[in-house]
Length: 165
Image 1 (cartoon, rainbow, N blue to C red):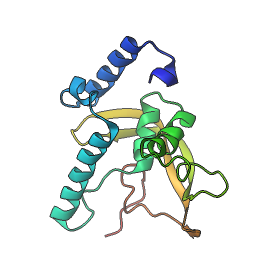
Image 2 (cartoon, one colour):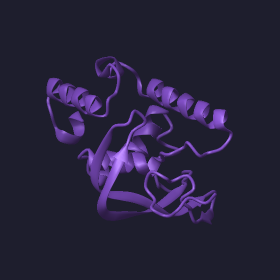
Image 3 (cartoon, rainbow, N blue to C red):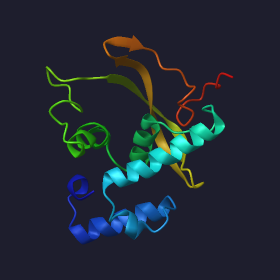
């Protein structure tokens, strides 16, 4: 937030606490003291627990494109959101020379996204919601050199199409 909005540390901290409160994050001050990998681990174990417990994906209702769209709904601009989901995680993992970039000689899985301009309500796992004006929907994914057309089965948070049974 400090870099994106060019704010002083105390103002950025207060803004982050407020944003976390808006999405009903328990104890936002403590959350901000954690490292990114600690938060990712918590989210990951929650997802794995839900997924394993039900032995299907019927409860899985979020995606990376949905998270990116939520960041945009919170006021972040698309170039920052793309960096926050590519370059920044690669840097945290100390793999910035290998992933999170489209430089020649690096590994790259590529998602072609459409920014659909229309009102969209985004929800979090605690029941909070934020109204957005657009959402990012994947139209094509290139994975290991092979093109894949995504379906909405695992994109319930950003797709209107009915979910296949």
